[in-house]
Image (cartoon, rainbow, N blue to C red; front, side, top):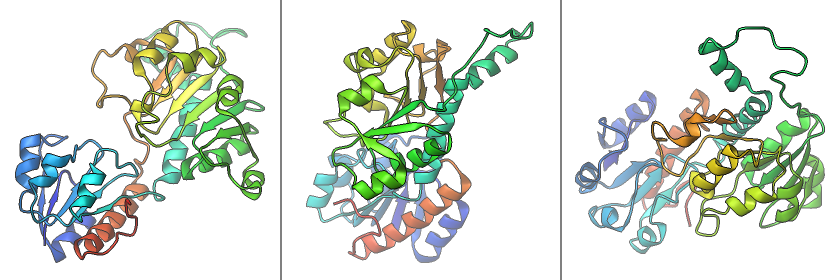
Length: 319
């Protein structure tokens, strides 16, 4: 089979693929240009793509032999799933294996924003730490007894709740479907209405999927309902948050701060207003970026691809 990859996978994964298939890997600028994507996919039986690639109808139509699309991600909103399915193309993705890594990053952003770690680092590097801080200077916020509101209680939300419990936090959540009583008890969480979660949480962490219903759902009206001291954490998808509204709210100190791993447009542009604010911590979409997680994602991608090209359902199939 002929496989096209829009970017590199770990060396062991590429070696494994090359034992079985003819592999063409794009090694140039990321994300791949549309022209190179169309050219690379035209004779491919299988495609490995990433969240920053747009796999739309025109791309799918250009690949007359395509049997499987496998994305190196838990999200698949960058793929025209309905159209691919109409062409009997199998679609695989990589959930589960990045749960712990993403939950780790979400909690690290919580700690960073509340204890002002990155803000302190910037002060030191700029040579502005000129005297010891006194009792009321440069104070942060402890997490004990604070309320964490989790918006979207899937795998990552539940993993985050476990971390919050260790720090003595109270956790509430809002989800389309309420968890069972047993799961709620095991996690130590309470179900909340969306309005209650927004108004009562000291920290709100976003873990809903990106859909037409969640597009821009966190906006000016949302921020107005939050506590003035509350912080927002987003490791899900950038377009769930109206970035302009968030920037204005942070500038006006309408909320306490934010920790962001995802943005409406990535990479975040140089000079973006968010980069000039002290009450926000920015990370470069690195939620799954651990060696262990990326290796597991690669192994799962290979399994998905081989099954899909054989006309079978991938291990994790987008339905």
